[in-house]
Image 1 (tube, rainbow, N blue to C red):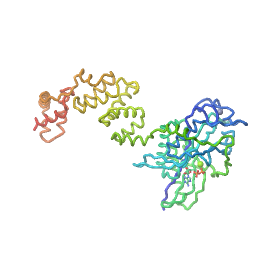
Image 2: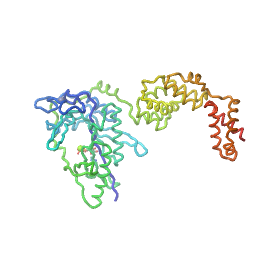
Image 3: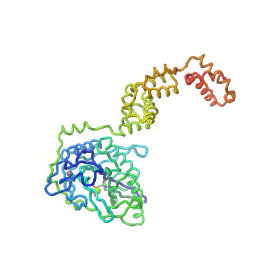
Image 4: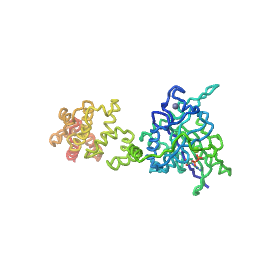
Length: 473
Ligand code: ADP
Ligand code: MG
Ligand code: ZN
């Protein structure tokens, strides 16, 4: 019997707000311990939470970006637990009425586009951080109360690589949507990995094992690469799996039992009495809809379709959004957007990188790139001369036509002049001439190169080729 893996991910993301979820303390990473705290986020008795509206907005925005439904009624609940890093001993979260439900995310995987459905996205608060020293431990509450969005997937991810790609796609959505900085180094994205196995061809889900608190995507992939075969091996030996929570030991490369899984009733969820349910108005939602941006995959597909760009170029413009915007502004005026894209990616980007410059600091207007494309396509300059023109334009900001004129780069299409260069090349290189005559077609390219050299790059290369061929017949 062969087995297949079933994976569902619960991803926690810190939202990009100025202040925390229930108080005005700064939502800021890296401050000295316990300097971004107040009675509310320290959980002192008698204080009242006030919901951060921007966090509610970012939650709704994420819901829209993930194709979710935004229920007209959402509420907050208390999840009771012993939290050593949360002095209230409960977390305010959304239990049965989350802010976003029933969405999906599409991403490139295995040569196609995969879709994973999103069960829900709910808003909650982060906890503090325990720090362990040699003989003592401390708690830093700066992180306590930071708005945290939990995005729960359906159990339909089928392997370690797919989980990895799903997480990267989700991170892209969050960053592009302006919802979170999603900085892994700063612990802004963490996830719980739920994984079971079942015999191929069966529907019923196997016993769920949850690997808690993973803070790197490659860690998730490695943990699954270990855990899936471990579960299969247990079943193949006739053993049984039990629902449990496991910990990933990154150094050892193994998972190990942490505790048997608690049930929902262990948390004694009840509606948070200090917060009103949340019922977004149409006007409020309209404002959120205006913040929806085009997502990376959709943008890539559109660029390929709209401008006939190859996948790699479209991807470059997605990754480098400023360069993509620059391209699109120009592409709307271009006869041949594909050529404009080539110049932007192969020349502009390279020169900017070499010079350490920015698009905003460019000395020439974008339309000059189209001028170069025109000069090449109308054969007024050769493509090698175009490289010189671009470099000049980049460093001095002069118009391409002016540079062509000043540097005498206009292509020579005068057959008489080119013929003279061809004669010189043939006379100077009897070896290649003989090679060509004995059937080595490639020798013609060498001779053509010589003609280009003699003409200082100005000969029309096609014409040069034709004339050489004719002369060597
Ligand atoms: P819990 O209430 O224990 O957290 P949920 O049913 O809410 O469990 O699911 C949590 C996550 O676990 C979801 O991402 C879901 O897709 C995933 N999941 C649920 N059952 C399984 C299973 N048998 N195998 C793999 N993943 C599962
Ligand atoms: Mg869970
Ligand atoms: Zn506070």
